[in-house]
Length: 501
Ligand code: ZN
Image (cartoon, rainbow, N blue to C red; front, side, top):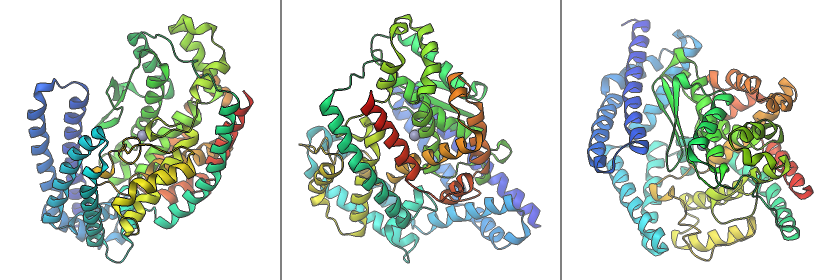
């Protein structure tokens, strides 16, 4: 086969894998949003069968040999083709270093541990989960060694979620964040002790069907393309790609507009990334998101930097008053305060912009120590409580509100948490760079015009697919390597505003 024929065969294979993946995504989307409860076992069977077929395709020796062969002839390919071959080769190299027995053992342990976690959390019984966590840590250490025995295991695991990120980069970013944020949280606590902030500006009674229409309007105005996507509802909002369309979900609370609005804006940010990828590169690395951290940067940028800004609410408040006339009497300041409510708390998923990243710094430090072998699982609850006290200023009195609160570790996900905060770090850097390039965006936001920002992101981030690894993509888009400075400046400004209202 000529190199052109080989490359075409690769693209054909990747597109078939993409279509199988899209079909799987559709089955899961349906399960989360539509499926009647009694149909769950049948759905699990369908998903299992298709996942098995996809696995056979992606591990087919002929496919692997094709990628290996192309990887030896990179110099005969153009730059986009090189990215597609390089990234596909990187992906298959990681998976084929794991023997089938290890993969089976890992997935059995993960599903067993997940079930144990659900019971342990309900019963506030860390001791029940501890032996499983110890086994999960041990198996991840083996996985990391199998993939690359030369590098620190945590680096190898981290790269599975965030290619290009290293423990050294996280050490530097997260230490800067921790040192910058801990004094801010002390200031926040002092501020709240002086004057309890009444953040009720978006509470009341709001009809569900009207909220549905409002959220659709917001997503559409931000740029979500409904001819290539849907907005539905789910218990835990998410975004999924079904081949040519992108589906987002939100969660509506009758008593608080924030629940649906911020979920919708967050997921719209994810969706704009997917819809902004190069459609001609569909199902190949050139047409795929760079990393989880960069994905999260898009959702956080729209949710926090845009969706909690004064300019945004100057626009949204008038739309809101059209849908819910009772809101007309509420001032911009009241509503803005509700959108930016902040207080130290125990639960990560309920925490605000100011405290959120300290929850992640804590998890990074603990999971890295577990994987490095410098922290024992049995010492985890005490280490958790101590760091919460030091960083956030509050400590849990039970494990349910402490180490048992997140699902990630019980599913064997070590190296995943940092991507959330990388998202926040990148979002602040990108927003700063966009404003440097486009000028202040406030007037446009106040008119409900988000096109300049959206197009800038598409040009600087979306269209590059996996051309660069995340730290290089950020440097390319902003002129700076990843840095916590922009996020700290943004949060400092927010706190100063909270202190002044
Ligand atoms: Zn997200």
